[in-house]
Length: 316
Image (cartoon, rainbow, N blue to C red; front, side):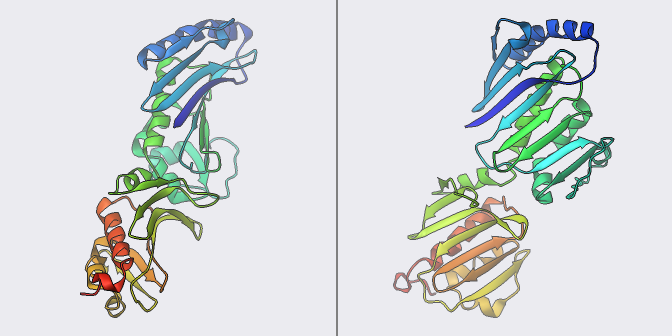
């Protein structure tokens, strides 16, 4: 289950009178958020202890204030079931030094914000054009971060506690980033016969299917980048080798001749990938996260062919 929490935190600045007036307005703004998102408003002993809970598409959203005397700001926190993507964002005018700076290619976005991340390609996949547009319009003074270990995305509003329109926009932003599915897991889970595999340790979640042996398809962290890979047992009598495919063209035709015909004919369907096999295991690896269902299915079909023993009529 995906959990999104929106908490109201404290930011400096603002006179005490302004803070008091702002606190008086918090319940009304939260009520408006609850009304527009079909949420539940919970009133506590003080205005700043009120909060809203919203459930939307298996997402749990909680909005609540926390401590402080002067101006209040809002913090949105999304806790993801699937792995998160490591990134940090600050306004460009902030005095922040990043070692792994990421540019999205969106001139307006890159002009306003500084961003870094462990895997630039994954960060760019997470930040869709819609997500960037929301941040530019509603949160030019924000700071934001994402964690892979905890699967958390946090957005901190840069000014005083916002109105309902901005509160709703914060929810929209987090939902858009969640739906971006940077690891391509949604596509994998829709493959025929796929069952969820949660992963363990550094192994990312993916899917498994019967072959008659086991096939696993999942994003994998290789050489500092995330890409999709598929692995399966080999039962066919094969000499270890490898084949490269680029834009549907088989580059190593001689090596491909060592594959059973049913597998060889599927190679162009992979797009751009490398197929490698030993006498025990075969792998298909793309150069990035693959989300094309036909290419993913072609990899599964190739691995199923290689997983059948010769007596089953593999060679044709």
